[in-house]
Amino acid sequence: MALPKGKVSRARGRKRRTHWKLALPAIVTCPQCKQMKLAHRVCKNCGYYNGAQVLKVEEAKA
Image (cartoon, rainbow, N blue to C red):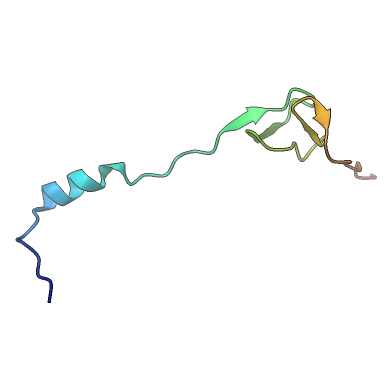
């Protein structure tokens, strides 16, 4: 059976875990419609990606 080599102090364990953090998503403005969108993805509002229309988006009828 595997056994731990010795006690790991609280400071040592917490020092190791300081890099376990979440990264914020890269949110940018769409150059076409100026809405916020995730970077490197098609805009859900207008359907454009990299200057070309990729999706046909129907506008909601009020």
